[in-house]
Amino acid sequence: MELQYREPVFCFTSDIDWAPEWAIETLWERFDGLSVPLTPFVTHQSAFLKQRLSSDDRVGVGLHPNFLPGSTHGSTPEAAVDHLFDIWPDASTFRSHSFVDSTPITDLFAARGLHYDSNLCLFLQPGCVPLRHNSGMWRFPVFWEDDIHYKRGLAFEFNLLRSHLETPGLKIFNIHPLLYSLNVPGNDFYNSIRAQLEEPSARPHSHPGRGVRTLVDELLDWLAGKDYRVCSLHTLYQEASESRSSDGGAVSRTAGPGRVVSAEGTKEALEKYRQATREEKAEQVRSIYDARNVEETYATSRDTNLREIEISFITRKVFAALSSLPETADILDIGCGNGYTLLSLAKKMCANFVGLDFSAKMIQGAHTLRTRMKDQLKCLPEFREADIRALPYDDNSVDVVLSERCLQNLPSRDDQYATLDEVSRVLRPGGRYLMVEGTEDGLERLNELRLKVGLEAIPSVAPDNVSALKFREAELENELEKRFEIADRQYFGTYYLISRVVHPLLVYPDSPRFEARINNVARQIAEHLPDVDRLGHVMGYELVARRQATII
Image (tube, rainbow, N blue to C red; front, side, top):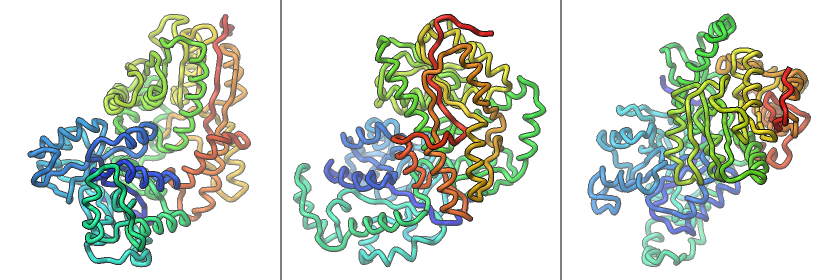
């Protein structure tokens, strides 16, 4: 199926091309200031990028190999690929110098586990969509590149671009740090300063007139005033891979470029789950997660901003707990999925991290992500396949337990409460349980507001989460207090208010998109002001294991 986009979708990338650190930093400062994701295609080690990307897994990293004669990357394509993977082993995509391409080259990257590239330029062509290469990889064509712009003799006037920007399709821009930071207007200027660039610390004067930087800045300013979607290349790949119909049935896009759902079988899937036995439900959930691309960072969630807010809450609480625990603290993530939460924690702290999940494919994905991210980690979490309803741990053996949207996917209330018993059993007295789960009450509060402003209610159960069995807060807290002391409650109402009420109202009648810039802004605000009126179907608890359980 070919993906179609009813509106323009913007994405920004940067071929580093051995740029000095000051040039790379200049470009990233501009994009970070606007919270616009920028995907780098790297040619060499960069201390700035290593540090910058260590705290942001959303954009991915691309390789930018030089396969041309005289390349310093290697005399053969194999050598060049090996050289760059040694430098950036966690790379997820590639684009070669001068867009050099061949089937053997693409097969080299496919063999190394890459699933997509951006190794084609369709300069200013409307209607760009992801393409499928014969290797099976997805290909995301570049819409505009700065040096191609001036090599075609085009003036750096924004109005020349503007007529191309509002046409439907992908708009992938490629910007070189040196060309941006020096505001290069063309080859003559660039050639006149090349000798100065041989000294890495030298920073020539930028061009005072119109050039790459003035045009890109005008584009970004224009885009900031629009509600067009801006996302990372990695997100585009995730959506493209999700759009493939696993059973060959019809697929339709019903919620804009960020949401692909099946046009057939929706009611059947919900009814099949409702009528299943307890163990059949568990197997259905396992098959749902097994079918996802487990090597993708956000394989278990589509709302990446909300996921990061949840992880931020967990991180703060784990840091506080570790202040009174030894470095060998045992931290267990039940229902860990592909391990992203534990890997995020391991970037910031050391502990004996273990993740458990009943999906063997999710555990396989966790091992893959750990390998990709190992250079960023302070310690290496372990990941194991297990049924969390019977935790393979002794009594009083764990310091901290985490669960993130895990219990809500269990088949029944009995399973949920039995798992709470298990968590209480394995925690040491005074240990912490950090629980981020769904509640019907929060969703109802959110829907009450949505209905008042003319928006439809969000259903509690949808085709992509047929297993959602959310809690009732009063009933849940009654059960929690039998096993734990409730130390803190965390609602995420601010993010829900902006992303689920303000955002849909602004884009109506079009559909809101998880990766819209307003959601990025909502996340920033929510980090400082977490809650407005307890809105939303997910909330967090910090729970302390009682010295002596009082389970009834």
